[in-house]
Amino acid sequence: MLHLQMRPLPRVAPHTTTAALSSSLHRRLSLSASASASSSASACTAPFSTEEYLVGTCGLNQAQALKASKKLLNLKSASNPDAVLALLSGVGLSGPDIAAVVAADPLLLRSRVDNIAPRLAALRDRLGLTAPEIASFLLVGAVALRSCDITPKLEFWIPFFGSFSKLLQTAKRNRSILTSDLDKVAKPNIALLEECGLTVCDIVKLSTPCSRLLVFNPERVKAFVLRAEKLGVPRSSYVFKYAVGVACSISEDKVAARMEFLRVTLGCSMDQVRAAVRNKPHILGVSEEKLRRKIEFMVAEVGLDPEYIVKRPMLFTYSLEKRMKPRYYAAKILQAKGLMKKSVGFRRLVGYGEDCFVATYIDSNKDSVPGLADAYAANRAGKMMSDVQL
Image (tube, rainbow, N blue to C red):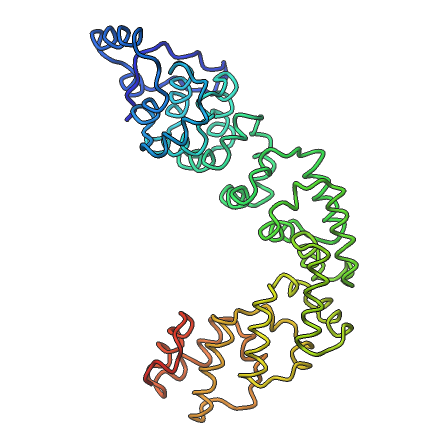
């Protein structure tokens, strides 16, 4: 609940959809006449304390208030902050929501009310966001709200990503997507990627690991496309999007170093590595340490030949701890009991979807091998299957 001294609130911008403050808000902002007189008298003798205001009125804890107050050094009165809090309450934010938003962006309290009032109202009235959605947005996008007219950008991005929640996930990783120029940056980048054969769905998926791809300078994105082609992946290939993702997230030097690492570790030729990269360019996004551990396991434990591995680069994309090891150890038990043919290859074994693997090999043998399901789950959780008594 907000406890504010009684002050006349700034006039909200004359936007027809900006609702008047509720009577409950007026009650929260009102004090008795005697309290007002007392506050006025004390105000004449005591300077405004930003930190006390953040704690007593905004609901921040002491640590949050101390941190936030350092960004509000020139704040001399509660007049503008009171008006901002009233706007936030007016679009339905609760006390805890407001405290979280202020802690996330204290400078919101210094925003020009006539700027942010119609923008806040538009979040609710034009975009149809609920109060919890507005609160979630402001935790990420308060800076965008006070720096630009955010509504047109959200009207473009929400349908592009497919939902408000998906946009918010991307914005948490890269907040500049909320402020970048749509016509000069975002739309040209999207158009270029579409020219390369990527669908909107592809671009959205690509923006998850490469959140800045859509807001880079368009010339830089063109360079990423050229680097993707240099990997030997044609634009017509369905894996070209992964090549673009590699070019966006990894420098040319790191790409070269990773390919050399694969050549040396597997003892194969660079041509074989290039062929593997053309097939699955996203293996270059796997760290050298993870590549090394996977190769060691497949060679030393499973007994695979390095040439077999390099011709099946998809193997590098599977999780060692959650897929390779648990399935290999489960297969060893089933083969030892004569419940699985030894001809079932490792690539096939790890290639199953999780549900399909469990149904085919775990659930179907739970009566023959009591405890197998628990052992498999334990191994996926990081325990060695040998620790479990079957």
